[in-house]
Length: 185
Image (cartoon, rainbow, N blue to C red):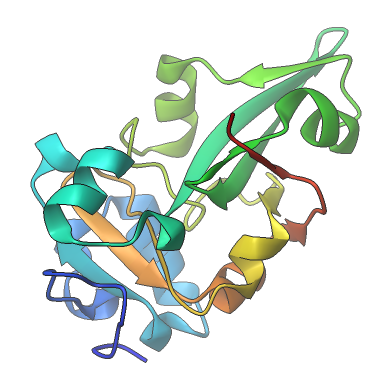
């Protein structure tokens, strides 16, 4: 799959395994253990353009082919459970409904930035589902799992990963949850 991306716009993807210098250590380790690593590409980008709207506009990548990963903290009493939620950029994660129920939490919210960064070893605004702590569920919207091509974070703001949704669906802890991605608006 590497090298033939219809969603790449002006980007020049290369096999992620060839440029592990573009990802943080937890992502590099996870890519090394991934059976489908040959289906994952990486591109170097301007870190100032990492946010989805700016990235897509500048590099000619369809926003419909972009997915965002957010870290959610679910609380019940003193216990806190974390999960990654991956939804298309054209939607938002249903944190207070689907995610809260999945985590069996009384309250669920986006994890604070410093907490998300410290627990993932990744940069805020670049967090990816590849390389997260092994005990975290990776919750995927069905549209993400079914997507033939996606652009996602790489763990840092200076690069992006291109990956089929099927590869994400095979990640450790991956679960496809109906209703996870809700329309924005």
